[in-house]
Image (cartoon, rainbow, N blue to C red):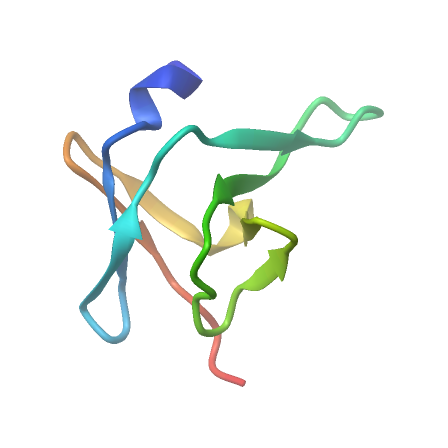
Length: 80
């Protein structure tokens, strides 16, 4: 899957079965030493509960992504 293919997919919270939004122009955070994807960086003007917001983007750690399908990305946000 290419990064550009993520754009337009809905983000759904697994536990709450809630729609959190739609992926826009997403960036990746990559560990330079291992080459592994660490997180999706999603531009946003709205804060999402349970996810870190840095400036105008929301950071979704890769470990929170449970499934990427044709139409949506299912994430599991740990309870705080």
